[in-house]
Length: 268
Image (cartoon, rainbow, N blue to C red):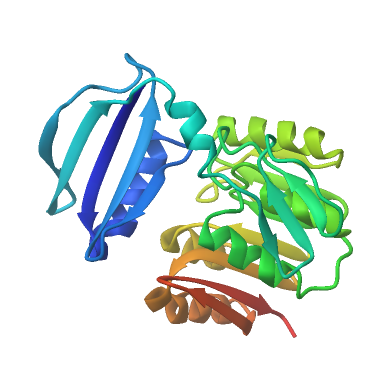
């Protein structure tokens, strides 16, 4: 197993993450180093290059790149980093090797399949805001990743639920995780920048800032009743809120944790 890591200045982290996710839709590991952020991807020998240590250009900046072989047994140790999380005492998101528990609604997601397991701050913030809405009617999850938001929506009572993603791996993961949870979630490939999006009164979008701005600019005239937008940094929240306001959706709630933020915008 090869670990390929990129360390970048915090003010350049968003750009580096966006480029890495184009290459690794299965997700990245994120490590906070204070004034820098490290993103790492894992793959078998031959799938990832063994580059050693070097510096590379991302835009007009330089980043540190390291690659090394990971010792046997890494996969078991990796599982220990993925533990169940409970959101507002109502939802429990867990990996498949963690046992279900009585109480909160159970959502099981395989973190090895696609980006978005519930453990990342941006996903948790989305789930918190989703719990503020009254379930019912169609729900569209844009950039569905592993399907955690779509599956949670289906279990809370939205129906039908559709997830769309640019990556085929994410579409397959959403379908598989939905089957594992015993819920009906349709999933399809779509490019947010070009393809028309299905209309739904409730939309979740855990995306980076550029794609959230694209989503706000491509909403149809009969805009959704509510959009949950996450994946943005705290200092980007006002800009994204203004973009949705221009589309007729105004900020109703905002959540922030660390450097990340999420918005709930509604038409009312």
